[in-house]
Length: 143
Image (tube, rainbow, N blue to C red; front, side, top):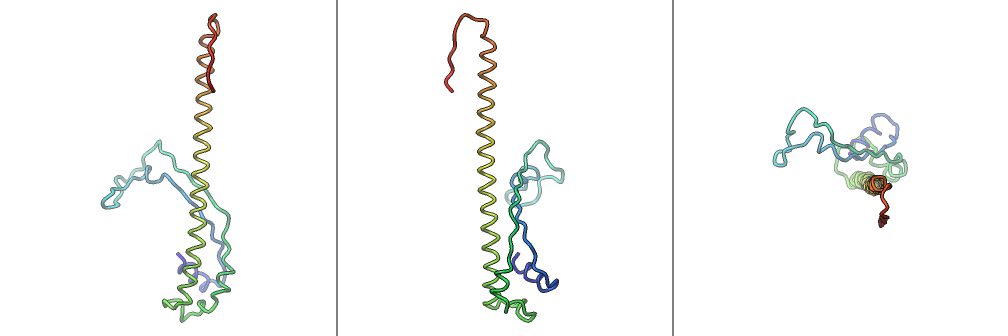
């Protein structure tokens, strides 16, 4: 990824803004054979959830300025240590953003699951209370 970003800078003369996007659940929509990684079917499975979270843009001007010697045409195709340092720095920044998005998505999913569980408990309690409201018996429910 990093080398493609640097090559894009060299070709266009513009610094891209990288928008990190993390998704989870596509493996259930388009499952793959665990041994071959071939798709099990060309038709997506319905009724599955895919979760997507979009992060803040990543600006890389500072990295490009720090490794500006790598932006010379004769160095881009090499594994020169200066370029390798730039590629590593870009990959670290992008990787960190992706790990952060994954953690944020997991937190949101856990909060939603907890909220849904609490709502379902309340619905059940309301149903039970409504069922017995004409009775002379008093029922108490722990919350």
